[in-house]
Length: 321
Ligand code: UDP
Ligand code: MG
Image (cartoon, rainbow, N blue to C red; front, side, top):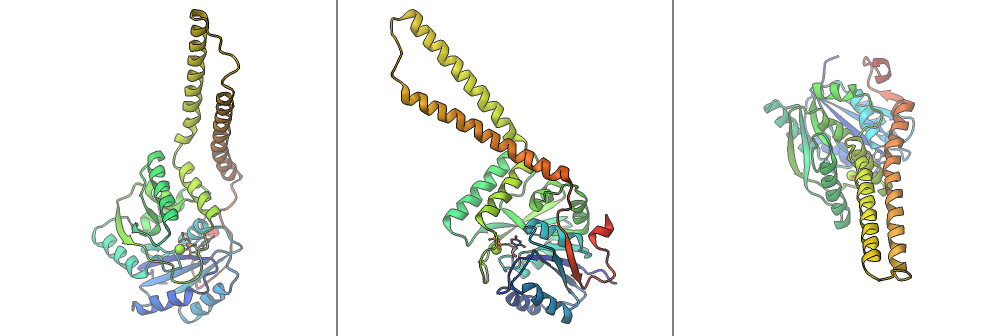
């Protein structure tokens, strides 16, 4: 089997409305059939989109399908696709055409011409509403501030990588996959590629707010231990404040005749709530890390493949390990 030049990993969850548009876009880009392979990963789709790709794969051997046993989450679908790529270069894009195939090819050209290992799209503009844009903006700033290792700001998973980068990425042992973070962590020669992100071509976003929060939390905690130190700093500050207040009250009591008794009830309640709040917040942060350790220690595989189509002659990721 000849090695394709470019493998493109496309995870999807219930994207029946958008897949025909995606197909049209790819078919309009006339490329030799052995130039690329399109690796679609069905992340537990139940709306017939898996069957749609299956039909397409029957008429086009470059279209390959990986079906996961259930919904494992976008990052895991991407990882499953990456594990099955065989091209010299590898791209990742969403199925909803927010990541445009033509842009991916431009990134591929840049990667080749400048001998880089990673070219990643940076979202100069986004089509989402103001609140969501603000949240994304804040997340990436916080992520950059906290991260102990290099980060690629305002960049999602939309990128093109060399085989070397993909091999290194797949060799990382962690089960919790925050692909864009791991990609930056590798430290390989990388270049941002500014894009203005398109709107979703059809259908509804499949990422719920809760999933986005989980993704953000995974990103923040898997690349930084700084939040763990927040407790230490806050604890130390509060102790210092308590000590200072005690000294001040003692001095007032000894050197003046003032009696500080009943007034100050509200201050007390506020302080109590605040310090308890801090304790719980910190417990929550600890919990995030413990949860991650729990997941890693169990060592379950990050995804399970039910079946694949058009991968004849290639090893499955399980056989490779
Ligand atoms: N997706 C997935 N599994 C999920 C959620 C989303 O494979 O559990 C896919 C989805 O079909 C799309 C891509 O991931 O191709 C990005 O999802 P979405 O467009 O909902 O996210 P957004 O662009 O709003 O961040
Ligand atoms: Mg989208």
